[in-house]
Amino acid sequence: MDASRVLRAHTISSGRAMKQALKKLVQRTGLQRKHLEAARMYGERHVLAFQPLRARQRGRILCYHSVGQPEFGVNDVSPDRFRRQIEAALEAGYRFVAPAEIAASGGHAKDLGVSFDDALKSVFTKADPILREHKIPYSVFVVSKWSEQTEEWQKAGVLSWDELRQMRSEGVELGSHSDTHRDFGEIDLERARREFQNSQDMMQARLGFRPEVFAIPFGQSKNWNPETDALAREMGFKTIYSQAEETRPPGTIPRTFVTHFDDPRIFKAALRGAYDRWEEWTWTY
Ligand SMILES: [Zn+2]
Image (cartoon, rainbow, N blue to C red; front, side, top):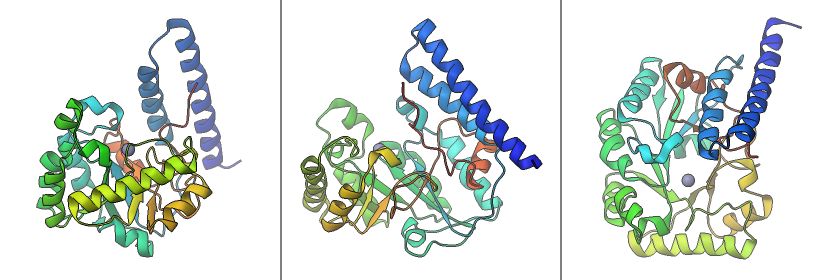
């Protein structure tokens, strides 16, 4: 066995051992699941950063959520860290292009795209100024019911239609992230149809256009299936974004999730493909 295979075997077994240990801890202490999920994710991000990597031919699209809204937990990246990540990528010779460009042609090995799921407030207030400073295009995926802002947390934390309209007029690409952020792996096709339809109708009514790009809520392989994919395309979605490169549903465009735990070393590993097989929410118990 060569060194890289030994390292890989070690990485996989450390991951398993860690899951076992965390499972025991949960049984013994009754810790809350969200704490354990966060601990699990933190551990996996660090362990996998050591993975041996393969050369890459295509561009990579990053997926963020909030930038400075700690209530979004593992999906929140602080504004300072976000700025450092963008600048580290530029210093390492990456070139930022629109996600649509990578989706259409695959892009080049040093191309990076930036996207945000859930259309949260801080994308406009914190991330946009940093991206604008570097002239970086980006995409935002909207949950239409959330942007209606009928609940207090939505008024405080989610972008309004007015804000989204302004962003679009300044060149931000907007896509659909469904109507209510349900798990498409769990709902039936009729419900899926309503999710697509309501989101398209709402975006048409509020923003004046029909979205043709869609980001799968939760984004990983178990949150999608071939029937749902066919329905989404039949209803007019031309590009469908998912998560990890090597485990994504067929025909979807992969994205690399950036998490709360991604210090400079982990971020660099993510750019080199360390998480191309890693899905954010795979481990449930
Ligand atoms: Zn989402």
